[in-house]
Amino acid sequence: MSAWSSKLAAALAVVAIVAAPTFVSAFTVTLLNYIGVYALVAIGLVMLTGIGGLVSFGQAAFVLASVISSSPGWAVGNAGLKAFGMDHGNPGLREGTVVFCSDEHVTFTPPRPVGDLAWLIPAHIDPTMACHERLYLFTGDTVVDVWPIDLRGW
Image (cartoon, rainbow, N blue to C red; front, side, top):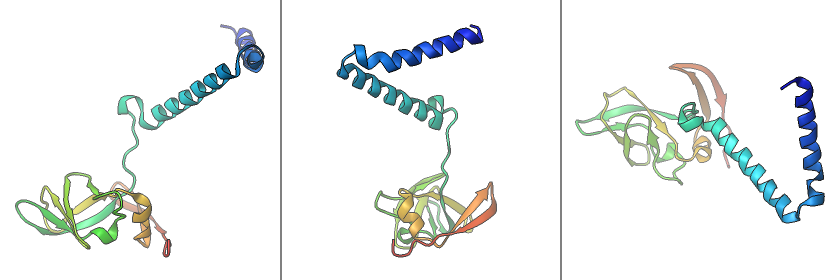
C-alpha cells in the first residue's frame, strides 16, 4: 500500500468514526466505546505481562532478612510482623515457603545456613514501606542508591 493510499484510508476511518453517531443508535456507540476500552485494557495487559508471560516484569520490592537460626527442617530470619504490612497475609519467599511469622522473626523452608540472606516478598507493599526508614536500590547484589522513606503517622 502506498503512502497516499494509507493516508486516504486513515482519513476515511476518521470520517466514519466522526459520522457514526448520526447513522447508528446510542446503544451501538456505547457498545463500540466499551469494546474499544476493553481492547486497550487487553493490549495494556499484554504489554505489561508479555504474551503468555514470556516477557514479564519481575518482583521489584523485597524485605531482605538474615538467617539467624537454622535446623534440618526450617530456618528463622530476622524479619517478622513488624517489618511487613500483614493485612494481606504472610510474606512470600523468593526461593522457599514462609511457614510462620512472629513479631520479629519469620520461619521458612527449605533451611539455609546462618548468615544467608532471604529475599522476602511483601504481601502488601504500602504498609510495608511505612514500616521502614529507607529503601535500598539494588542491581544484582550491589546497592546502587538509598532512598529515605518518611511515612511516620501514615
